[in-house]
Length: 257
Image 1 (cartoon, rainbow, N blue to C red):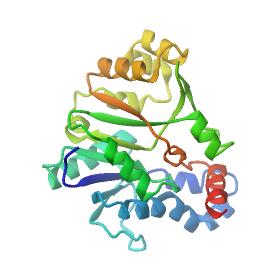
Image 2 (cartoon, rainbow, N blue to C red):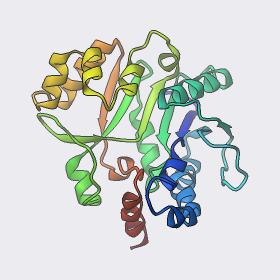
Image 3 (cartoon, one colour):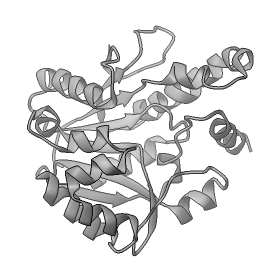
């Protein structure tokens, strides 16, 4: 994509749920500084080290001077849902940089991601005509890097994949009230509601392994009326979000070895 800069939304909602999400409340609260580093700062470090990044929007946290951010940036409050946060970030970035067609969206809780990985993702966002670039990681890649991480996989005809947490959206698509891809995000944990959106036939073929990754992407995008592209990335780190304490321990142990 021949843009002079890259705009990034960092999705940080749910961090407090992570800290207080188990019975070990005192231990988790005491470790909150580590959690803060692992679920936000390390991603910000990777973004600030990526040469293509021009502007960063952190969504879901209050402005905090203790964060180290060396690129132009802004903080936006949590709008109440993942989709609402994508929408408000797209609106903010559209007003700030109307000349830029797309924005990159990252989850804040992928602490092992590196600047080089982010740059490779951006390199693959090579067409201004694509509405959504969606990253996936194969089960083989994930298990080799993080055995026992207990990711959720979709069993496709040609590969088993889990979702990645570095994606790219066309801003106008994210802001289009008629877009239905947002409904798919909102119903991502409800197969029945997803079936109503993309069709029971497609969902059945998807969950029974009758479709290849490309066939699945083509069918879903055609149903949603968007141009999309699924990217199989060779980086387990992009799929290793640490939304559970045991997953943070796995990443921490790996980074310290």
